[in-house]
Length: 172
Ligand code: ATP
Image (cartoon, rainbow, N blue to C red; front, top):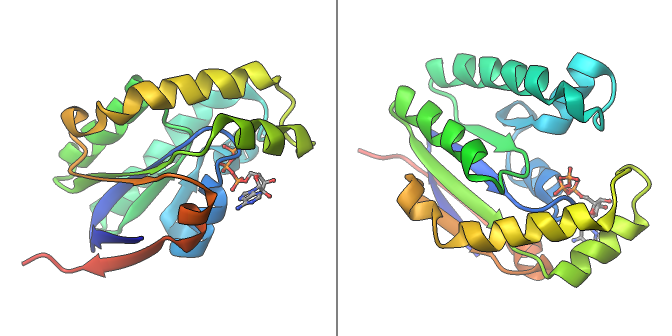
C-alpha cells in the first residue's frame, strides 16, 4: 500500500503496543521527523516505561512538535493514539498550524499482538492492556474521519505494515 502524504502534514501513528509503529516510523520517515512517546519518556525520566512521566513526556513532545511545525516540517507522532482525547490533541495541533492531520493505523489481529507482547521483555504490563488497546482501536476506526483526520490509511495486518510505502506530494 502506498500512503500519499502532503509534504507538510502532522501524522498520527495509531496502533496497540507491539503493532510496529516505531519500526514503521523508522523505515518510512527520517529520524528527526518521528516524535516517539517512548523516546520522550526516556528523555524526561530515563525509562520508557515510567508511565507517570507521561504528562512531562507529552509536554516535551508537543513542545518539539510545535517548533517543527512552525518551521514547516512534516512531523510524525509515534504513540498508541488509540484514545480519542490523545488524537484530539493531534488534530488541534494540526489546526493551530494549518497543516493536514493524517492517521496511519496499524490494525493487527489481537492474537498476533498478544504473542508479540509475550515475547517482549521491555513491556512490563499484562496482556489485558493489549486487549484494551485493541478494543479502543476498533472503536476508533470509524471515528477518525469525523474527528478531523483528512487522510486515514488502515494497514490491516503485519504484511500490509511491512509493505507500506510513503509518497510525499506537493500541494499547489
Ligand atoms: P510500543 O507501542 O510498545 O512502543 P510499537 O507499536 O512501536 O510498540 P515496535 O516498537 O515497532 O512497536 O515493535 C514492538 C515489538 O514488535 C518489537 O519487539 C518488534 O521486534 C516487534 N515487531 C515489530 N514489527 C514486527 C513484525 N513485522 N514481525 C514481528 N515482530 C515485529
